[in-house]
Amino acid sequence: MVKILVGIVGKPNVGKSTFFSAITQHIVEIANYPFTTIKPHLGTAFVRKPCPHTILGKACNPRNSLCMDGIRMIPVNVMDVAGLVPDAHKGKGLGNKFLDDLRNSDALIHVVDISGTTDKEGNIIGPGAGNPVEDIEFIEKEIAYWISDIISRNWKKVSRRIDTANERLESIISEQLSGLGIDEMQIMEALQKASFGPVDQWNEKDFLSVSLEILRTSKPIVIAANKADIADENILNELQKKSKYPVIAVSADYELALIKAAKMGLISYRPGDNTFKIINESRLNEAQKKALDKISSFMEKNNGTGVQRVLEETVFGQLKMIAVYPVEDETHWTDKGGNILPDVFLMKKGSRAIDLAYKVHTDLGNNFIRAIDAKKKLVLGREYELEDGDVIKIISK
Image (tube, rainbow, N blue to C red; front, top):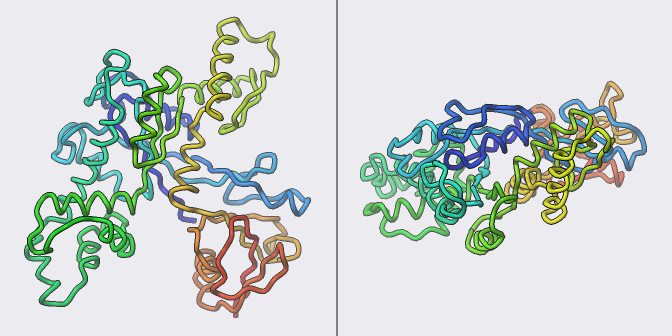
């Protein structure tokens, strides 16, 4: 199964590696100096959905996912790339490599130091001296400039094809961006929102306007306002007002601390929960008790540490994914081997029964006859629009 790929971006030293470690439970090198991350780190994180086995009343047998206490944990790929600095699209810092690593990302999580303790280059400065609002703007523009540089190559020659060969503008740009996983529909949507002049006379402003809209349409961004545990609340409020993107208060440090405490048997905590439970208080020293009290207060105020919320806003909110469970037996919700709800697929909202058939196997799509809603026991046609949590049997020739 092809998984979604989410890129974790941001300037150096804002806690990207800590966020990555917290969301994947894969510990990577973490340090307070720029460019700790050079090669991209790849890992698996999980988004959560209620598992339909609770409706069936029988335990499931997950094959491509996990199930914990009635919650289906659905895997997505996550990539932590090198930090981005101003003029990265011109090769400054590790810019070119950073941008190339993002080519196949479906969406981006932008980790921002909301406490303002880092400058634009990622160096540690006094608390509040940095500007998170500017950080969001410069990262967005760096990626847009990178897209613009690709589109504008040989533009005079390429754009003539609109007149000479009667080609569409979105087709030409799609060809220019063929290595970025951006389709024509996304480019068409971006062009409708962008502001630009005559195509054969595009200048830097035109290319940048189009590229910004392509970025926003094809690689949606969620802001992880990290270090919120030590930040001024007013800065967070300002960021939420000014940002074009969803902004979620995050403490990756707290999430990582809870995961470690749970592994040590000190607390009961499932990653992403909005609370935790101390197992045996007598095992905790005073420093640990105080630390857990601080974390508990933060979680109560922010509905958790924010790490899982960021991922799920990215996948379910921005990418608009739903969870669908294909089965071969609509009565028992099993595959041929008798495994209950073995698979779950993340599908784009608006996907149809025929799209699920092709997702499961090409032959099922090519030979599609009908589908069955295993929950409602209804016969469905190929154009049926899938709903979140559907359990579907595909019938083919």
